[in-house]
Image (cartoon, rainbow, N blue to C red; front, top):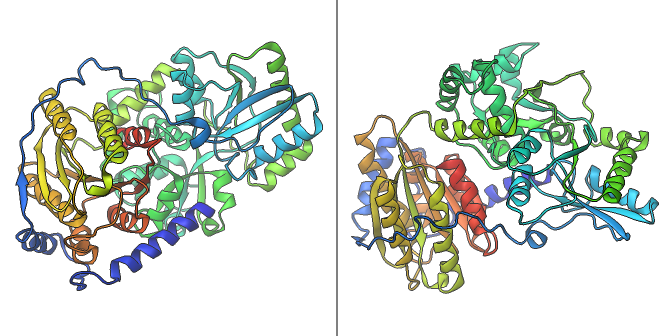
Length: 544
């Protein structure tokens, strides 16, 4: 995939950055956790860290919980724009439509518009889980929605949105586990989804999965895993306990399949989630084995409150897509898998699927205590709108942090401050967190790596109090380090301690932030001023 190649290129650039010049370019490679902790202690002795107390801000209590999504025309532009007198906008899942306008549904929509003078369709590619948020919140209502599977339509119906099915299938596709060649050889021929899940639980394989709140394949896999432990009731205690066992052996979820491919390329996973079409379209995965699971991904088409003439346009478009030429094109692009996989009818309504997502949120850390430190850049370059958006995003994102998680806050410029010591994120801690965030002021240089070490020291000092805790850091910054320790000095500590560092960049130095996040199964998120709040919500929902 083009995106995978781009990401791998970024990692290559980041590797050059890690080995490049900087203050004290000596790099201790492959440190054990104990060696990394020893080096951390030595480095932080020369870093001055001040603990600063802040007042509480209780204004979050009773506040409007509506999340303002980014301007859809700016962030998720149409890939095809119809211009006929009667035009219908369609939200499409991204495996069949894209910004480039050359995916299957894009191509067919252009041909439909060319051959129909009085009617047309517009296509807007958008991840299905995100599309649900726009529609359900009323912030943007298209004329139609074609997700990868029916699960999202069920969720929308449970949230009061009428979903009128125009077509049960626009083209064929399935979700599945992708197995590295050595895994496929070990599990043998005729491997089933149950075999894969059993291998995950036993630790024979490592599964990298996508966020079920956004990804159709991730949501489908989540239901499949729950049903593996209790087919009759995927919301039972037995199913929940099974999900905990799976979570205990899997790395944190990634936002997209491209990131899971990166994990596999670095030896951190040997089973990933994918759709059949994505697998067939990526030559780098040609020798992997695809094991289909769950409900089929046949791209149903739903009208969402359109007029009767608009519905007729959708019916015409669906019939157009069933033509031999359209389906031959789909097959050529990797759709319409052979093999006869019929899929599974889960029979779950939207309320049950929402409960499935809640179960995942509650069990994704396998019962381990989670210790998280936010590291916020308040250097001079953050002055004005960047810092205001960072503060707003942290205040908003705090709503999605589980109350039993331990949360702390470190901020930095030329100096490093602990603005909130680690403590359970109950109401009192939430108010202190908000007060500390409100107090951030932009000035000075950017000592990013010093701040990261201070945050890691907080985590490693607290960790012995708990049984096998899960440690993580969230770094929010708009630029590269210009003061303090270089990345080359601290890289071995970050790598050796194995603490994931999720980085969020504000028009940032992508290479440096990607280098940091790629070390320990985390990822970089690019968040401009328009969508940082929704990005924070997505990240916090998945990781906190």
